[in-house]
Length: 135
Image (cartoon, rainbow, N blue to C red):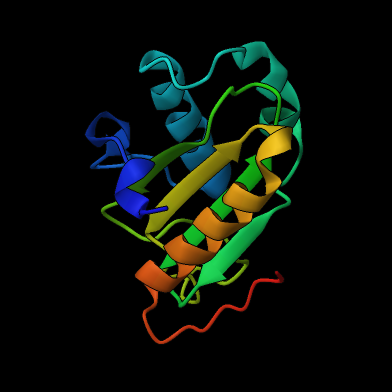
């Protein structure tokens, strides 16, 4: 599997005008809905209504990789956004430097491929990172 198989140019949002992770994820979900990558958007209500995004990998100090397995999608979907300014994630605004958000959504039955994509994206965003996957 190559990362180019899951990237779609129409799912890239630059500039990402969001100022928080929640707003960034909402914008990326909206883009995936617009491009038809999300078959059942109503099934993402939990992701968008939770107080905080739960499954997020921090890659270095600039990239956030929220990811979720959900029956809202029939196939793996990836959206990328780049904010012109760091997102507000921390109590201390001087700490946050995260500007890139890579959202990965996968159907529940795609667990293996989903984990491979999340690991590959993390490695691509931070080449010195070593990620070991079982199996």
